Length: 149
Image (cartoon, rainbow, N blue to C red):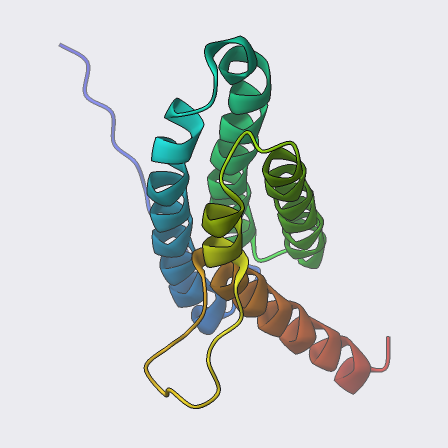
């Protein structure tokens, strides 16, 4: 019988606690986005579903993976890569909506900005993810400026 014992040692790199907590919240938002887009992807015409739908699904799943990587590593480059990937997801959703493979209303609902008159409205799932990653990147940039790099 093999027994594996893992020793837990603190990582020498100080990770941002808020980023890890934000990573969990980001992951929840990404899961919400995946669930919101699952129905519209399934309703795509069959001839497009295997190509365009698969590409969109792949981008959404990769978004969740990049969130996990960025939150786990705490490296600025991972956060920058995550922000670039969000742009790719937005582009892919926009293209599918323009080709009318998904309803423009669905694309608009996931990317919509919050209503400034309603404090309980935070915007669409993708907008929320983009805003949270943008704030995360701003914190990283502020730290770099504070260090003088």
